[in-house]
Amino acid sequence: MEQVEKRRYNGHDIATVFHDAGSKKVVIFCHGYRGTSVGPSRFFVIAARKLAEQGISSLRFDQYGSGNSDGDFFNSSFNDWIATTEAIVDDYLQQSYEVGLFGQSMGGATVINVASARNVKAVVAWVPDPNVEAFTPPADGIIEEGGQRITANYWQEAYDTQTASKLAAVAAPMYIVQCSDDEYVSAENHQAISVHAQANHTVEMFDGHKHSAWTYDQADKIITKSVTFLVQHMAVSEA
Image 1 (tube, rainbow, N blue to C red):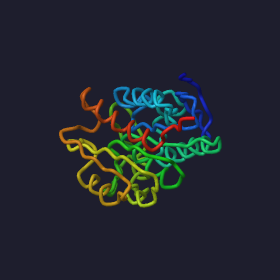
Image 2 (cartoon, rainbow, N blue to C red):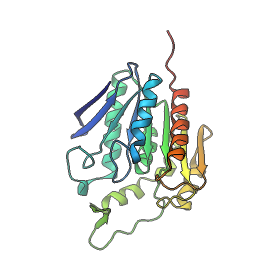
Image 3 (cartoon, one colour):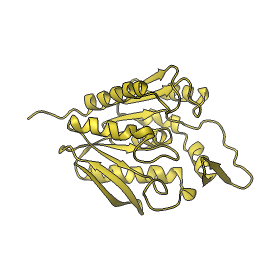
């Protein structure tokens, strides 16, 4: 069953889709910058349904100002993305769920930060961008991309958070996807992730792959690997 509703998290009315697999295990999906809860090319929907087939529930949601959630994208904040995701994780932990995290791009950076501060079972991060390069805001403090505007504060917060260093505090097993032809995440940022990854964190580089504009076969392989990883670490016990 897939339930669509607005829920109140971190002071926001957040649009959510809950894939109910009937177990007390749930994966929280975090979309990327200018993205929505479906993920790039609906990859999140595919992954969530595959997880449900394995008895693992999922929650996909739109961050404040994105998708069908309340708010204006202009006012988006990376710190707020982290706080909202933490509020969702806390909600499920309080309901005695085992929680996994699954993020893409800036959602990947978000789940790294959340996993460093919360007791989660497993994490998948696709093309996370730790933003290690010092950020210089434009003179007017506004950034426009793809017809959307946002205050530069979002990217200043992303730099200040020092996401790569947070990997040292992530005790959960993690599967990190990097792409050699990524047009958004630089080699310096790839290196920062690799340097800070722990022994139970698998970092896999996919040669010839772009940031998220994957072919059907490329996406199918990465989705399958990601779902398999989560199932392995969040397996539903047979009665």
